[in-house]
Length: 351
Figure: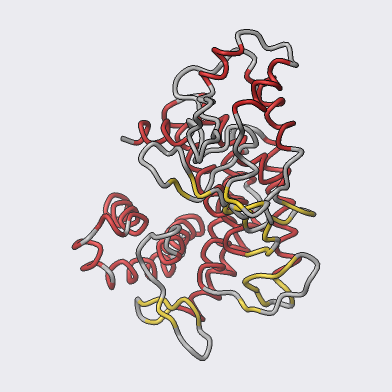
């Protein structure tokens, strides 16, 4: 089930075969027609997933996809070491304009190149006169890649240069950025260059959003942040710190992870219950994994890891109390809480 899903997700459409990176979701069962918006958290989590899938299944394509997704965000969706939040689906007034092609423009471009067997190449790219999306074409490869695909990809990238790129949301968000930084450290196990980028990005994120011992949630690049951090910011940042320590073995990351976990416990933890925000209107943190992983599940994972690494049982205690408080819900509907379920299974195996 895992590899079948992973394989279909990267055939083209939901995954952008030309620039790299994943769209937000697909509207059909084939993963062909996406909502063309690209989100930082989707690409961060999928980058980590495909890297770990490569570790498990040794399929080189998975590692290639992880690198392409990371490279897309680093080259096109970042500035001065900080990551943009998203790019829109629409451009020039229509959805997907930047990403889709007419049959004729691709055929003409291929004819002007050194590519042979143009009809066969178009067929392999699923580019037809009828189109597969509103009479135009989303590039998709169902089976084997055409010969010289790197050359073809360059040709198709050149065709996009004449199109207006979708609007980019240049907001920098702590939690989403931390997800990408963690994924880069995971990817660095296979390519050290990503570790160097991750370390620089982490330092820049802290310089931007951790000011005078206060963590902030978000800001626009070059602006001062105003909104203080929520639970998810502390959780995902601590998680990224733990991965940074695992990769570098630099104790400073462990110390920083401990600092942010301590603050999160002080601000957001109340006898097994976690709140998302401690402003005038308290909001209870959701424990289910929805758009992305539950911040409760992430911080429980970080606390168990920290407890094992520094031999301090109090972090395991708070993690266990969280699981205990939510045990009924986790047992009743485990499919809704995969991250917390993972922690339950880990705890019952390892204590």
